[in-house]
Length: 75
Image (cartoon, rainbow, N blue to C red; front, side, top):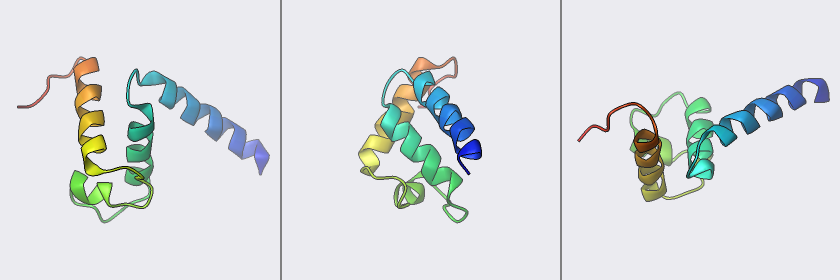
């Protein structure tokens, strides 16, 4: 089992390191997204057990992620 867990741990660590700010919130969002097949919105995703923060943390994490990227922020 540990043969499979170490590559996953390294993959998650690389993703975590790729975000310059609000890493924990973004990782919680990714965990919630990957473990949910029913959420129809970000608000519903924030209610997932894997997202351990409040909705405002989710909003701030997404905002910061877009500000740091090459993608324009929608207004």
